Amino acid sequence: MLIQRLIEHTENSGQDKTPRYYRNRTVRWAIMLGRDGKISLISRADADNKAGSSLPTPYLTRTSGVAAMLLVDTLEYVFAIAKDDTDKAQAGAERRNDAYLALLKAWKDASADPVADLVWETFEAERHLDLLTGLPDDAKSSDVVAIMVEGEWAHVRPSAVSFWAQIARDRKSSGNDGLCLVCGQVNALLKTIPEMVKSTLIPVGLDAAGRPKRGRDAALISVNTAAQGRTGTIQLANTPICEECGGSAMAALNDLLSNSRHRRRGDDNVLIWWLREPADFDIQIIDAPHLKDVERLLREVQEGQPGTLVEHNAFYALTLSANQSRVVVRDWLDVPLPEIKRRFAAWFLDHASTDRWSDGVKYVPLWQMVGASGRWSRARKMYQPGSAAHGLERDLLRAALHGTSLPPSLVPQLLHRIRNDHHIDLPRVAMLRLALTRPPYKENVMPGLNETATDPPYVWGRLFALLEAIQRRALPEANATIRDRYFGLAMTQPAATMRLLRTNANGHLKKLIGKEATRPAGRALDGRLASISLLIDHESGLPAHLDTRGQVQFILGYDHQRAFDMAAARAAKAAKNTLDTVDA
Image (cartoon, rainbow, N blue to C red; front, side):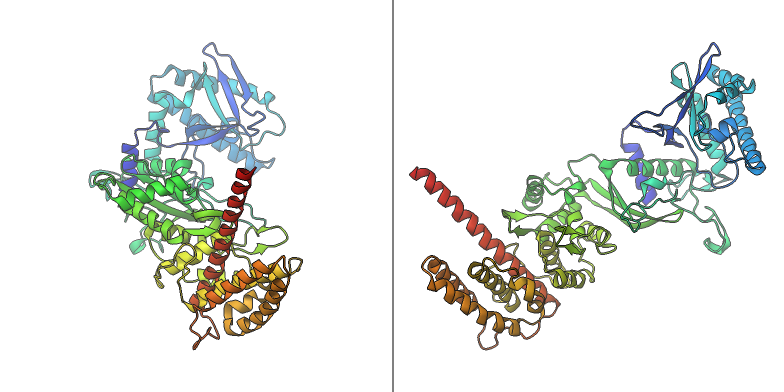
């Protein structure tokens, strides 16, 4: 099914594609050949591309031994430049050069292309060796060189493209005909998948310094030992795929992986997605949830007008990682487009939360949620790079795409972080709300303050926020707030913490009410403290200990109350400014 969908993408995309068995490679040198026999060597490096610039060139993965590419190859293959000064390296370079020359002659013999004749005549006469004097000392045997004839790259001529396709089929073919599992037709079957996924296209993680690691070219299907194959058979003997299907599928896969509009790269995985038919939908909304875009999606799903959701279209998503030289399929999704829109709408509705610093409900980018699972650095005012929960990005993306719950480990990990650093912000609150709105809890949690909620942990969170505000108003110069000193204790032992902080608050309120300048504020805070306290059953009171769910509710109540109070303060300030403007 996966390979079929990739082939359909190739057929339906309608875009100009790189020829099959061609791959973009960085070409450092160009042999300039004229029809009059003149030949020269130029460097394709410049200030922006010091290693040369990228071109689509003939390419098949070299699994072992000697395997030349048509026209475009390394200096070792084209000029027999060895990797080092040893006799073994020089002998290897000469074997590779012989294979390169044999391929040029085969191209010339198989076509009636005058350019093929000219190129072969030049190399047969060894006139290309005169160019070696123009190579700098720092030229490497691995530098790639291409051939241009009268301003045209020789490797993109129709004769070269068709000849290279035949070479690829010959190298990768099993030599047998059979029933292809993909198209259901009897065709020439492949021995191995004709192309591998380029090493740079699938992330393989970060090193200790937070830099991306370097991967390897990886095969989508690899059975190269008897232990891996059914009944001890290797290669594609038990997975019959014809050349047409295998080539088309890998061309589509590499194209999608190279297209920034259709991929989402993580630290150690990459997601690619596409639609059966073009439509106005982009999963990048999950990382850039602009308010107008999210609201449009929500309206489209909630209104559900006939024709609004195109029922016959389909959404496909493939999540890949790499293990050495093998591709690992982490997830495959094939659902109607309306269904994925409903799941994305649910994702935004389930995590939407109010923010202390601005009005209205906010939607959080997924990448910010991932970062918020890490350690908060007070000194740097940021999350420590590389400290995010391992695998969380992939888990959150799966939850959004499948409409499922979050990983069970997330909430305990997040609560542990908050107990240690006492830092609560929008991304962390959004993840906690998302956890409560989905299984196993499936609670109806408001995105902002619920002034009628009587759940003791939630009310306790509101009270803690108010107690902190009272302390801040009474002791504006205090170096440490009650959150700095007691938040971890308050998360787990509300009854004991409340008795201690309530006693301190009484003293703060007495101080505020005793001064004329702060008396109105003191009375207002005292009244709010009393009204919120009424929401707690005075017979049972606050629980002695909070479980995981209770700790989440406490944090939500605390954050919702702070966001509500700051929104009220902004509104009061705006009203005062308006009044002052009118009076003036």
